[in-house]
Length: 74
View 1: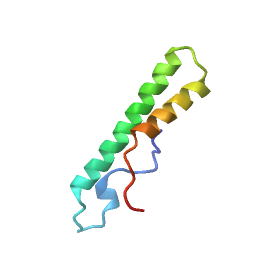
View 2: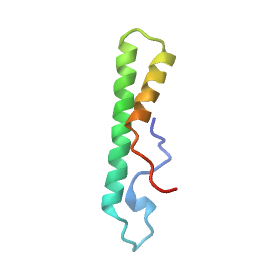
View 3: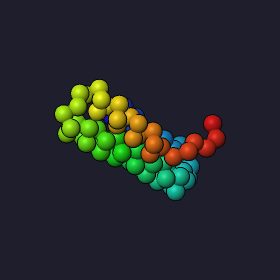
View 4: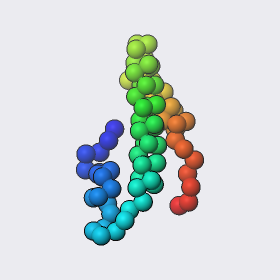
């Protein structure tokens, strides 16, 4: 789930007057959206099969991890 206290707006994270790399921000947001879509799809699919909430979350977490792109750097 998204944390309302965390802003993904690049204007909020970039210092005033700096030029934040727009392409990098877009790529990061696309990756997050892809992972969250996978989580939601798997959760709804498992929940529709009359599984428990635990089983639905477990399946959704596995789908999220499979959709996560490889990590680069620290």
